[in-house]
Every structure is written in structure tokens, then in C-alpha cells.
Amino acid sequence: MPVRVTESSTPSQVSGTNSGDTSPPACTLLSVGQFYLQTFSGTQNVSSLQKEEAWRVNVRIQGCDLEYGYLCGTMEALNVPMADTPVVTFWEGEIVDTKNYTFYTGKWEASPEDDKRHWTKFPSFSPLLSQVEVDGGKSLDLSNYPYIFMRWKEQYFVNVGTDCGLTIAGFYYVCFSCSDGSISGFYYDPNSRFLYFFMSISEA
Image (cartoon, rainbow, N blue to C red; front, side):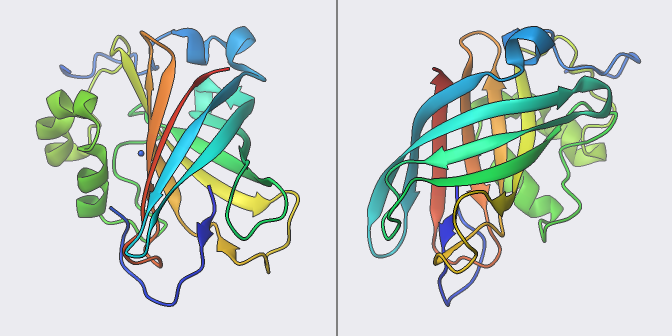
């Protein structure tokens, strides 16, 4: 979700070989008929040098194209300090399918080291790390892996202006569990020092 604008700045602290079919597993999240317009609810924990906060969040999936590893939706934060109304943003996502996208971001000021540091926060990523260090995970077959990894990048504010005191310069590293339908994510923003965001949501 949006991050407070701060003056200081550094990053915040979301198997086998490829056999040809690199599509993510056909679990609930990516079953097009079920995933489209699906809503997830939960909390986002925000930690800084000053204090810790918990924001309630709702995420709504509005589009999904597995062929191109693309999805999009909205994210709503319900109790953001300094905001008089829930803050809604539109985001676009990349599904790490090793065909369209790998574990290395290659943009948004995220280096391979930033990527590895954030992906390794997910225990489910550990079995993949050694191969990701070799080629970004291009040779991995994730078609039957019980987790789906993504990046979500907020594109614009839907219901507030850019002068609202928040920024959406960063993006989320996201992991979806096919077994229980939960989503967790870690936020990275190279312009926000000493901020840590963790998001945990499940099907509403």
C-alpha cells in the first residue's frame, strides 16, 4: 500500500529444471473463472524508526492473463494515518513463470541482491535459491510448485491526489500459497529509509 513520504532514503526491509511448460500451478488463485474479481482481506504491518502501525487492506483482482504472466487489481487501505478516507490504488502485477518474468526484477531500482534479500524472506523460496543465483530461475520448472511468486507495482492513486503525503514509488514481492489461498508480501522502496512493510491477506 502507499508509503508515507519521508526525506531520508534506502531499501525497506513480500525445483528441478525447466521441462518446457513453465506455467504456474493451476490452483485457486489462477483459475481464471475463480480468480477474476476475487477479493482478499487482511493487514499490512508498517514498521519505522518512529513507530509501528497495522493497516487493514482489501485487495481485489480485476484481470489476469496467464499467457503473458500479467494480473492487475486494486488495493484499499482502510485506516491509513493522515488520510481522511480509505486510500485506493491501482496496481499491475508480474507472475514469476520463468517464461515472461524471472525472480530478478531488472527495474524499479531493484538489484539482484535486493531481489534475493526480499525473496528469501519467504520460507517457500528457499528450495529455489541456488538455481535463482545461477540464472534468475530461468531453468526452474514451477508448473507444479505449491506457491506462486509475483511482483505487484502500484501505478496510481484511484481516489486521492498525489499531494496526499503518500508515495507509491516501491513495489511488492508477493507469494501466494496454493494450499490455503493466503497471500503474503514484502514492500521495497529505494526512496524510503528504515521502512518495513509486511502484508498478509486471505480470501474474503
